[in-house]
Length: 289
Image 1: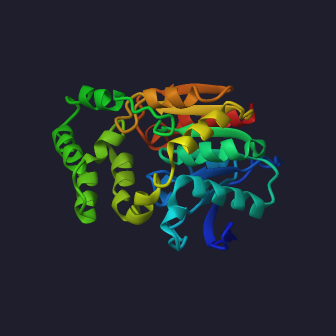
Image 2: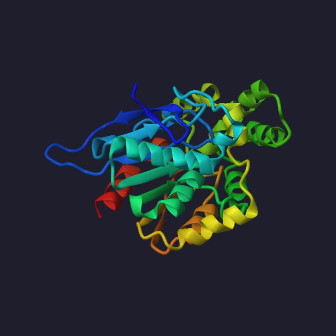
């Protein structure tokens, strides 16, 4: 397992998946896991993207094979963005492509704001828009529209309601399993297998620290800097994503001067599980463009 030293001397792990097509050398893609603070193993190779690009997947502090942080403030996403910069330096990359899923989009946007000259491309999959100060409710609308899909819906609805107040982590794991089908476009074997891994990949302390220590002035500073990011940005949403919905992706795309928004049909919160071929082609073509 390779490791790199971050800005404070912490030794953090990362994984290298896939590789370049024969005879071609391409810029690698650093891939950030969301959750927040879910083990990066849930990304897999992003539905086959590793067949076209070398993927570098770091374990954020307190997840996977990376040790917990000495200071809880190091779990906040602006500090995690500086871990990304340390990884870039370790890999000897002048510029690279950055991909992030879910909550990690906040880390990726903060990195882009602080180090815009280091990015060739930025890909944000199913992002939330908390950084933008917007909490659209279309995810709830999507969830309610799926009430006739199967017996899972009523149980998921109850679990979502209970999760809003639950503090016991073991109980949270149970409720997340019950709510899991809402994150996928279908509840078939690939989706069930992917969802079964979630409980063991959650890390409560890093999760709790992810949004801490970011005041309003800092948030607005990041948003202002995003307008000056010159790297092209791809924002991907799923039309059946009942976790973050689609409008959050719209708000995120509007934060950049050079962005494109693409919504995958019949796709939930994990597009590499629901629509691996479509996602791979979309991201591959964007990176090669």
